[in-house]
Length: 571
Image (cartoon, rainbow, N blue to C red):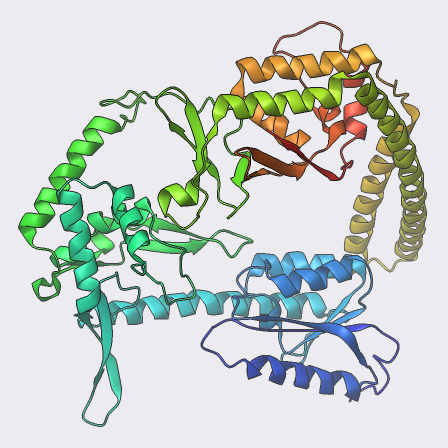
């Protein structure tokens, strides 16, 4: 029997999802319509902006844009009830479902599933929810197994299993009644010419990068150019993998890799299967590359590898120097024209940064180079101006005073909120203890008591930490202390490039610097600069037992949330 007004005074959100790109977009509309009818039948009303939908995204992970927005609203306590068609729309992972259940229970938010009758506000919700979650999780395992079995059968029958390399295409094979039995793999004439030319160019001496640049200049479409996984252009790694692909000489394989999602994410990683599980077929009718050309390419690749790469122990096999990246700004600079990383290369008398996309793909028009030593020197000069001058030091000291005052206000508010939560939690604990003392000792009551005690312990620890931080005096750094901190950073830049890169990231608010060429021949570096980031850094030397300046005592821990506006400077 439906309680006509059970949802009348609650803020309700609807979540809908479908997992396959081949499903209809109308599936979302159908789910929302059903949820809306369910809500209105119980006296509720769906407010504007309370529909959250993820299209063509798997339920194997909770990392979904609309779902994350919904849970952010849940954390802010702006949602009382979540309505969905069934639990599998929310998650198909048992562990994720269990974590979500506890999270919603803690926040006091109901989850209602229409098709499976889930209502997490009921006493029996945990058992029902767990069983439904297990069924959804097992569904994925069963689907994965059946899909692999079907693909294996297609491979053994000579049909395409999808994911064809450049140079191949598939065409349907029908039975006598016009039904599709499968898709036959065949050679694509246009793609064949592209592939054969790559092998010939490499055999004749052109490098991976040279072939990629040539194809980008000629406008040759890269692999998957017309798919949703399309790329910006050819790169050296694409050429390298194509030259290693034995499919092009008629040696086909299936089940070489097993793809698995990282727990809690939608990111996939592959593992090589045991050799005994791999299905291998010789299909000479699908060979694009002659055996002689293949052997010549493999011979040149092995010769290049022996000359330029390193052994597993790190020793150079040929001309590779084996040196680590000793450039302070590597990884910090991006091209202001296209956003690609600026990569280092050797010139006749110095090292230069250049746009990676211009170099690898030829897709960026920014061909101007930037000397590494000039860029490093000018950047440090610009930073020194912001830390060594009297005006800069005065600004920093005032900024620290302002920030500490702001943090004191925030800390006091948080302390009050946590003390209030602790009082309410302890009140609930006392009621449960009294309930148990009367002989009402149910398992669910004991579990609730344990949860509340754990919450109280966490609140007490957080309160103690806040009290300790506010009680500890923080000395305003003197001008000498500021200069000492900057001098330490300059020394690290000079002697430890890896550590210096991480330190500079902090000064740039964890972001990168965009360098843009200007008509006067110079580069302009633009990015977000956090002047107080200098005081978050631990710049002491390993084994340094000398007394730390006041700036390194308590100030670093209190400046974690500070950020400033962006600034720009020429380098």
